[in-house]
Each structure stands twice: as C-alpha cells, then as structure tokens.
Image (tube, rainbow, N blue to C red; front, top):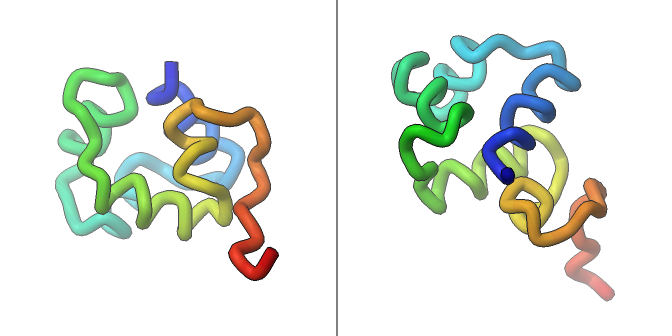
Length: 74
C-alpha cells in the first residue's frame, strides 16, 4: 500500500515523524495517521514530500516502482 512508502522514504532519509510533520507544518500525530493510512494524505502534502525526498508523486502513490523523479525537460 502506498502509505508504506511514506514510512520507507522517511526512514531511508533518517528523518523522524516529528521532522517530517514540521516540514509539512502539521502535528506529528496528523502525519503519523497519513503514514499509517488512517487518514488520506492531501495532494499538496504528497507534492511537498516528493520534493523533500527527491522522488515523484507517482512513486509515493504506488503508481510506479521507479524512485527517481521525472525529468520534465524530456
């Protein structure tokens, strides 16, 4: 499930839930619920996390297994 990718990306980046929540300007508990799939993550947050982790929104959402971001110039 795609929300597992949120946790995997965070752990791979050596970040805590609190750090990611601060980046998103939300409470840690809110972010924890996104990560656990309890609440749907807003589109704006997926976009911001893709920027933070240098990946694509499609990767976060589970639409692709390619972690590298798109090259929009191609």
